[in-house]
Image 1 (cartoon, helix red, strand yellow):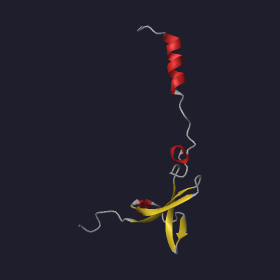
Image 2: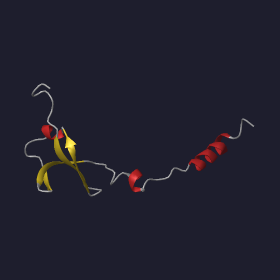
Image 3: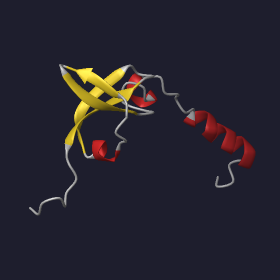
Image 4: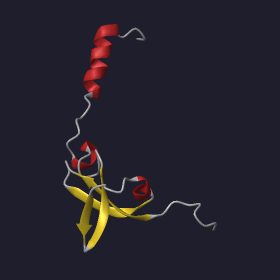
Length: 87
């Protein structure tokens, strides 16, 4: 590989405040963060932290707090409005 062509791939902590989740993974994102960006200490290592809006800890699909769409009510409402023209 050529030197200084690829971005650095370093550890970073992604934090979802609403779901109280801290996920440590590797990313090229720390290279683009300002030098005075917020950091967090995890297992004795100081890592840059990036706040995310939605994660598996706060997404309605994964938490089970999603709403159920009433498809039968929609069909009945359609039939009442437009009738049974095909029969």
